[in-house]
Amino acid sequence: MNEWNREEAEKTYNILTWGEGYFDINDSGEVVVKTTEGDKPIIIKKVIEEMKAQKVALPAVIRFHDILRSQVKKINKTFRDIIDEADYRGKYCGVYPIKVNQMREVVEEIVDAGEKYDYGLEAGSKPELLAVLAYNTNYNSLTILNGYKDEDYLSLALLGTQLGRKIVIVIEKFSELKKVIALSKKFKIKPLIGLRGKMSNMGKGRWAKSTGDRAKFGLSISEMIRAVDLLEENDMKECIKLFHFHIGSQISDIRTLKAAINEGARIYTQLYKMGCELEYFDAGGGLGIDYDGSRSDSESSINYHLNEYVADIVYGLKQICNLESVPHPNIVTESGRAITAHHSLVVTDVVDKISVTQAEFDIKPQTGEHHLVANMREMIDWEMDEDNFQEIYNEAVQIKEQGLNAFNLGVITLEERARLETIFWLTVNRVMAFTKTLDHVPEYMHQLKDQIAPQYLCNFSVFQSAADHWAIDQLLPVMPLTRLNERPEESCSIADITCDSDGIIRKFINQDGISPTMAIHDLNPDERYYIGLFLTGAYQDVMGDMHNLFGRLNEVHVYADDDDPEGFYIEEIIRGNTASMVLSTMQYNPEYMAQKMKKDVSKVVTSGSMPPREGVKWVDFYEDCLTSYTYLNRNE
Ligand SMILES: *Cc1c(COP(=O)(O)O)cnc(C)c1O
Image (cartoon, rainbow, N blue to C red; front, side, top):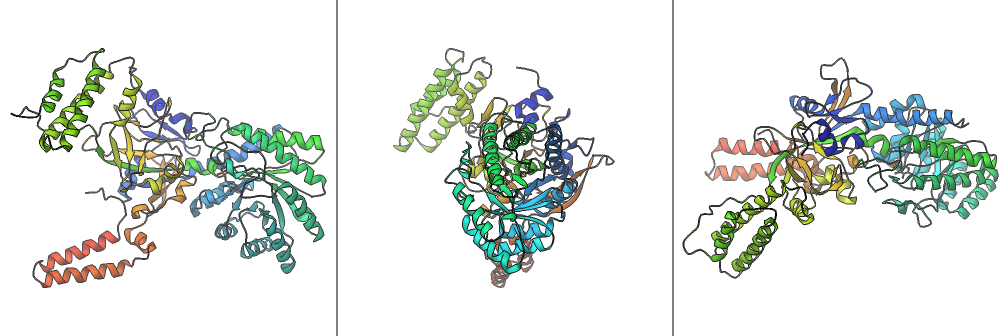
């Protein structure tokens, strides 16, 4: 075995690849965050300590606002640089689709960081439009409106237009067009209109359904031509300013993008030649994230870099526009995931270790005990070597099965079964320890290792904090935040505190790919052990549900600050849901509940079976629990 050091730790959790330069491990074995705003790496454990001092309980979301800013800058700068380098005539006018993370602080930070690039916002629903109208304060940037639209939605869009915003109404289906024309006449406003194309190019991967003939959104080619005609008939042809498509989120294979850009550019130039005065080419979202750090075209990864993505759009578009003698359009993209995924992480701590192999019972021979127990005990004395360790294991499994049958037939007693199982697990642990000394371990022994790996129980809910992991099997980097200067000797899966068997993480990233277990340390009894779930800033952050009534998490907003001794400060604390808040969303009335409990307690007090002082204490305690955090209270 290699000596354990920082490089080994980095490899074990693949942190350098998925971390995109934002996350690393320091020489003291702690996970650090590096932002371009500060020179000092921020030690996540220090943030947790400060949270503790400010009474912010775990689990919690930590947002690194500098990462958000840095991602906004990165995408805008990359487009600018490549546009310059390619001698491309159009500009980059990106927008952030707020559905990816609608948190006001996130949107405000993105708008602020994007100000100097005229970076805009995108809305996909009426409530999102309400937010975008109020928060896109930069009148030079675009506001792109996607999603299905009713009259209210369209009227709000026209209000925005009257206020001087650059609002583009993207037509997702033909019937919307008639509404747009009618409202535009009613209010006497000419909106900017975009046409969304249904691309025939099917990407592969999870979101492939978003494109192709059967896609939910967009106009077919014939509808697009009819749309142009209809607008022309209504004297609104000059309103068509943008061509849009979106081939799905997390494009993992760059070839999908290349093909879509090609098809999109062809449609764009043809529309232009039909007399549409288009100015914008909107390639939608889809810029992916390398969740597993494998740089492959697997669903959780991407086989390209930002530079390549941008170059494929700029050069691809340039080439076809030049061929068709059509002016270079301004380029819009709607990247959401790539902007927000890295900026937030969920921090939780380990509450307990659930061991499969631990059985503690007195195994001394008893007079008259069943021979199966005696047979199992004999295995303890077998010398183990390379030739027989599998035989010992197989034998033990067989006796255990026979023992279970015997128990079910009433042949062995509960105590005999306890003894048998205790010896069985002792034997399995001995076999596992032995295989650690071998160079080559048979495959099924590896599987066995994963099957009997302990579960580390953590204070969080998968359904609230890793919804995509549960719902669509999204891989998320998960790793310990401290002690990474010690070799993690254990491997485990991560269980949450919901009473749902799906509340578990059994897919981890390691240097060889994906594993059902994660490398982890043995717990020290008097030390908190922190686990981080990374790259949770896109979708997960806002999609969590309240399974088991575990509510939204506490959250802290962190900024880098080189003048600070620890290199950061907490700018804002947002308290998570209390029990009474989540109960209220389910139509309970916490005040009524408290009164009801008080009445019931006073009945018992009146009857004399509880002292009045104690009664008051219990009532107060119930009320305290109502106003407290929904997760395990770990300050005991
Ligand atoms: C969801 C969505 C996006 C964002 O996609 P990402 O993959 O997160 O970048 C962009 N545009 C449209 C129309 C969308 O529906």
